[in-house]
Image (cartoon, rainbow, N blue to C red; front, side):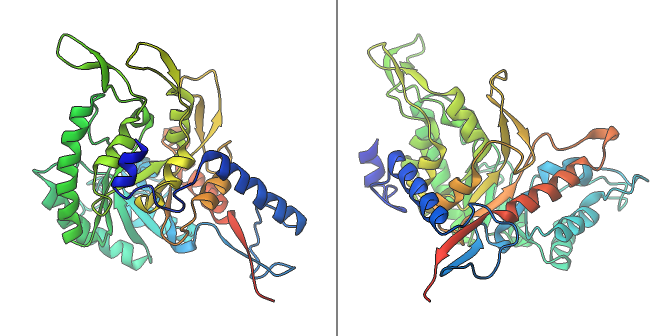
Length: 372
């Protein structure tokens, strides 16, 4: 697998020799340096300059802080009501801009038709973005060859630099299907690049389960065992780095770490291989322009091992994650919490969680030594 990564130019950034041990050592070393300087890991007031020749900078630059509208889908789709909570694109996007968000990832382009007496248009959505100083940084739409140019037209109208999907390139467990998907995505990625956009796919935990690519064949001639290669990592190696990109959902990456750690090799032996979301990104950091900054509390009574919570309220170490992968100006973080909507009992909950999560995102900082 590493040889395939080397040949496709993926085992390059930020360090070809990067290993999990080195990541942890670097993290520990950074903590020691900060501790010796009397500096905390997180700081909320973000002074322009810290004592002792250190500057403190946002770990996620202000212009790169975003939200996927799926997290507030209840308010985007809401009909006009008397709750006092914003509804529809115009009011919700204005409120998100007030919170501090600068970027929007779309999860569809429809709102309740009662607002305008018809459906809103992409041109009208673009004006709302512009009026509020917001930038569309991506979308979750259906990606297929038949409708791709139409989706590119909408993305271009909205000013997107990235176009993506919330689904896997294939739901299959088999290498041949991932090979076929890679061929399609390489071509669609070329088409996106011609329009000055990047094509990306978003993961859930199943994408990081093991590929069935070896061992005895079943009745349909399909392999029944695994070499230990993970499906999406295989896809990364098979696709062209300049045409196909990725959005890691960090929460689902840690769920994958919890769930997908055992496979049966070609000899029928059980093997364990722990998934490391941080290392997966760090080895090819420039292929991940977008992230879902989704937090979770560990709960081993749940099948996923985590339950979703607002950003900053959970157990996932976003400070370590974003600081280790680096490339701060290149990476864009979109907050998401699938469970944010509160329903009729709490119509303002998703927007309240959005505000709380933005505040925590803004508090992530990185310290740099400066010349005296």
